[in-house]
Amino acid sequence: MSETDSEDPAPRERVQNVPEYSVGEIAGALRRTVEDAFGRVRVRGEAGRVKVYGSGHAYITLKDETAVLEAVCFKPVWSKLKFKPTDGLEVICSGKLTTYASRSQYQLIIDHIEPAGVGALMALLEERRKKLAAEGLFDQSHKRPLPHMPAVIGVVTSLGGAVIRDILHRLRDRCPCHVLVWPVTVQGERAAGEVAAAIRGFNAIAPGGPVPRPDVLIVARGGGSLEDLWAFNEEAVVRAAADSAIPLISAVGHETDTTLIDFASDVRAPTPTAAAEMAVPVLADLRYQTTDLDRRLLGGLNRRVETARRDLRAAVRGLRDPRELLQNAMQRLDDLSSQLDKGLIASVDNRRQRLREASLHLRPALRSLVAERRSGLKEVGARLRPALVADRLKPARRDLTLLSRQLSREMAAQLRRDKDRLLGATRLLESFSYQEVLKRGFAVVRDAGTGTPLLAAASTAPGQGITLEFGDGRVAAHVDGGDVASDTSARRRGRGPGNQGSLL
Image (tube, rainbow, N blue to C red):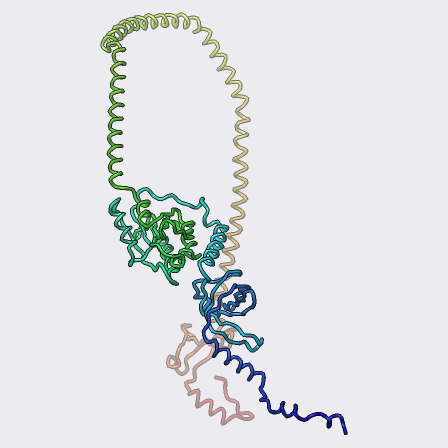
């Protein structure tokens, strides 16, 4: 008996009674079992290895002290999540438990994520604060001073709460001005996007346009829990506040509430009412200050004028009488003028006498000197005249030679041009001459007596003497009066040896 025949047949029968499944059937059955048993679950755990792929899907590993659960959040859900976890943060994920057959594992398909308690939110808030601070969004060097007297104030808040009423009431009491309100949602998933868009929208208003550009912005919201105020901790809101070119006051929550927009704004107000007080001064105080400054300015001017008047009086007392000074000057002028007349007459007489004496001594010497100089000039002129004439004629001769050469060249060129034109005209005349036509086998018929050209057969008569002009000479002939066609036919019929007709 063989070893095979000695085995017990019972186990084989038991194996054959177990149902047989394919791998896909087993995977499908497990998936349906898991989804039926855990159709909707909330799982709490620490987020680890959070990774977002290029497709937009996020893969998260949830873990605690005893187990690990793989989870996936697909792009449509992940992009709309208000809260996105990071590694090491404790979260609560809601979704559906299912299996992933390709890896033989079960996983959680997430449709909502929230932090596990206030502690997680605070940790996330602190981590985000450090990140934005490292980028320089909270630096004091970026803070701008608030304008002292803003003409237009922009307010970003909800129209449904008491915040806007408190702000408008406080502005009206302190210093009424133009207020632009940009209504937004201050809580929920849409709040962060709307607040950021409002801040950027106010900054996009062009100066001098139909809508006035605000001089200062107030972002306000009433108090609430950390979750209620979370929209003002979002990066989009913080970056919009930091990028605002208009000075911005943050007034979110009560005095003890702190959000990240408070660090990015130019000024933080403890309450919305306090923000209105920071934005504008008290009108009554301004009026009092203006009145006081006006009073002080007028007093200062009066004191300055009185001091100047007193100094002027003191200076006048130290001066002599102007009439006395003028009389003395006039008397001195009269004395000097009489002395000047006498001095001028004496000076003129003296100079005239000296001139007469000098002329008597100089006249003979001048005459001899002039005669000597004139004689010398004549001799020099006689020697220089031939040289001057020769020097003056040299340029003229040179110019005459140049002009003669240029005239000869121009005349030769003109003769060549005239010759070329004459040759061209001759050729053109010859081309139009009837003699050229005669050379091609034609002839001109003229009357033998008058030499007039005969242009038609009707102008000839039998027996008339004519002249035939060919290209190489002329021949005399007479008209016989016969029909050319009939003569030609006759000649053709009578053509033969000895029957050749006359040429004419």
